[in-house]
Length: 224
Image (cartoon, rainbow, N blue to C red; front, side, top):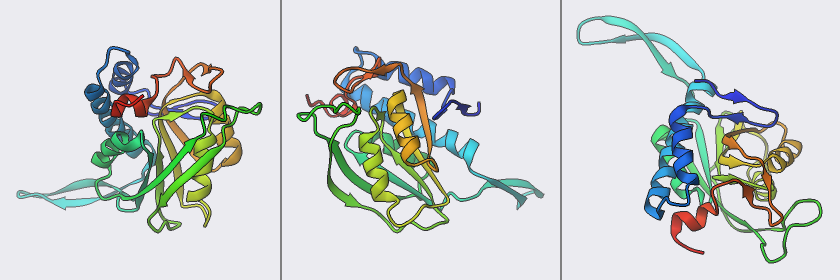
C-alpha cells in the first residue's frame, strides 16, 4: 500500500507496520519486545520507502534456462542513514535490513528537560557528538528518530546534516509524530520529507507525544 499523504507528513499505512506500532504503544510490552518491535518497524518503513520513493529500471537477466525481463531498484548504494542517538539505534538496525549497503552517520543530540519547554514550544538542544560520512548531491539521506515531538531536536540535527548543502533526497523517519513538530520541521526545512507511522493528537505540557508510546529510549534500554 502506498504512503498516505497528510499535511506535513507521509504516513506508512501498511497493516503490519500499524500492528507493530500497536504493540509498541502498549504499556504491557516488555523491554525486549519493545526493542524487537522497533527493529521490525524500521525494516518495514525501509521497504515502504523503497517501494514508494526509489526509482526502478528495467532490463533483462539470464536465468539458467532463458533470458527474461527484470526490474532493479536504483539508488540503493547511495543511501546515508543517520542514527539520532539513542532511541533510534534499534530502529536503524531494522532500516539496515532494507538498506544493507547504506553508509551510516551518528548524531547525539538531546533536549534539556530541566530547562523545560519554552513559550514557543521549543526546547534548548545540546549536541554532544557528530560523526557523518561524506554526503553528496546524489545521495538519499534518511534521518531516523522514533519520536518527533516538538521538532526541536530534529531541526538541530538537520542543521548539522545539511550544513554543506542538500542531497538529492532527504527523509526524516519516525514511528510517532506530533503536529507541532511536523510543522516546525517543515517550516525550517521545506525540502525535507517526513515519513511516519502515526501522526498523534498533541503534545502535553511537558512536550511529550499523546497518546504516543512513552519514552522510546527508556523503554528500549530499560532506563528511567
